[in-house]
Image 1 (cartoon, rainbow, N blue to C red):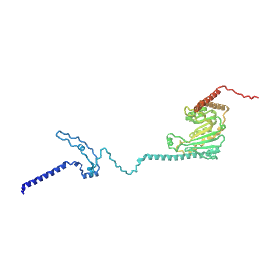
Image 2: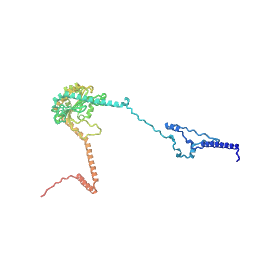
Image 3: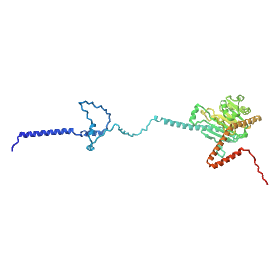
Length: 466
């Protein structure tokens, strides 16, 4: 039972306290330096802020690493450390980590679909407005021009209907209905009207064409401003073969006389120009005729006075017993069939004013010339050439026919040769489809046929005996 001194006991307790403190401090220091997961600790406040706001990408300027000296250690690289550390997904359960988008990823645009603005300004539709105005103006001019042409044509027909009824039994036949019809103004187009008349001695019938300007066409109306034209009246009388002798006569403006003589076949073959001074006609006109006897017969003093007084309405007169129309204008082309010659009287009149503000009263200006045309029809029916001139006229027409036959002879031969070549080609194609034996028999048959054609022709007589 010895008693331990108190100094020894106090010394031992003090030593234990000191040892305990050292262990506590060492444990604290080791926990702060050796915690391998300290870099993954995230602040919940920072994560919450990152969820509420978009991550803004910014350019990162990489700075060159600082130079190291022998006495200075190289900086710590996280990439090197990551190679030595193995990360397991089980260690991060429950931890939210926001991944930073890569620099190459494209951010989707949020397009908001708003209402379309339909309230445009007038300047945006100027092309459509101009088009609608153009269509409206064209339609308005079409109906207005059509109405004007109808009014002018009816005004002419109503004014001259009485004179025509005195000269013809039927005026205004439509030419369609089987029953007899009168007073019909046939409308062939919006600017072309026709009146047919028949029932007169020495004339099979006449055709009156009222050719008005194309007032319904806006483009033609605009061209009228630069090249004025006029409304025309054309009267064509069709005569029977016995109602007209050999007559060729033309009276027209001298300006187009040469050109018309080259284009119209009967004038080119038979007519020659005569001196206008021999007749009481304006110097602006020219005369083409086959014989002076014909011009003297028809260009009487009343006729010349009527033409002179109405020179602004008169255009041309053309009489022909051998009318075949115009020549073919295309070079190198020759007509293979001449039209049958007909006997015609053609009168062309002009409505004065060049279509400017044409009134109904102006359409009556052709009345004196229409009366002259009816008078000349009667004279043509009664006129007969002298015996000498008649023989010359017939000789001229025979020469024209012979010249025409010579011109077309080569063309007819070429056409016949082409037909023969085509026939031979078809026969060769037919032979190719046959077998060799059939081809041989066919060739022998053709050879015998050719020999019979080339051999002398012998007339055979059959004599019956007994």
